[in-house]
Amino acid sequence: MSSNDGSSWRHVSSPSDAPAVAEGTEPVPSAASEPTTAPQGASRLRGRRRGPARAAEPVSPRHRGLLIGLIISALVVGVAAIGGYLVSRYTPETISTQTVAPTRPPFKLELPLQVGEYSRDANQGNTPTKGVDGKTTLSATYSKGGQPAFVLLVARPYTDGKVFMQDLNMNVVAPVEDGMCGVSGDNNNDGCSLIRDNTGILVLSTVDMSRTDLMALTRRIADQMAG
Image (cartoon, rainbow, N blue to C red; front, side, top):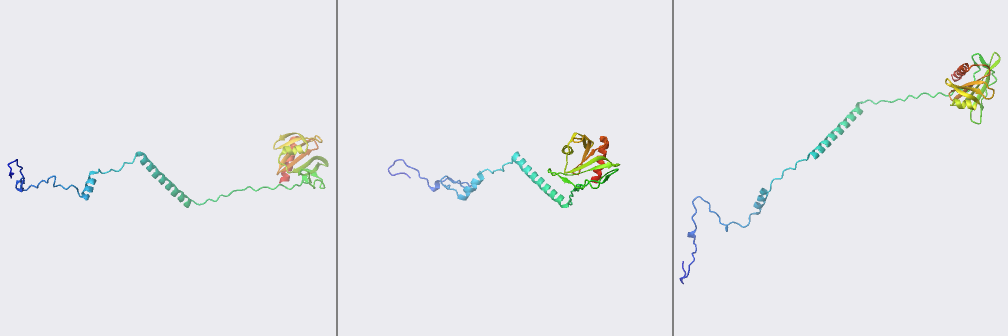
């Protein structure tokens, strides 16, 4: 269409001027025809598709070793507990018995009337004497053929033969076998002693006698008294 005043003209397109669309081909929508906003559901779907899938984080060798160690420790503890239970369940109880050696009481503090061929007066050496130190003593003279041969003296309690000899004023004391021998500070006679059952036994010779024979006589008397 042209203007009436003869000036420049502008072509106005009409529906008949639209480009023809080939048969069987979908029309291409123009930019003006596209919707400006996509549906909300479609937007979330596209967001999910765009995000890369997150792979599981690998376990480090250190953590893997720690986990294996914990599992093995738990198994060991469990096996030990089961083994201990089975052992205690099927092992018969043992009854421990303690053997206690009987304590021998000290022999009776009493002098024998006769020792072999030696004897004492029945009226002597029967009454014990207790000193201020708490020691109890007995003594008597033994004779052979009517002649005094030795003096027997016993005292209790004594556990040390050397102390026993010192208390009886015995000098030059020396060990002889399992006993001791010395010289009396009162009369210079030889004497030998033994300790039996917390008791000191001294044989003090009044005749000439070797220490070997004197110790043998002392042991014989000690065995007779102690039983």
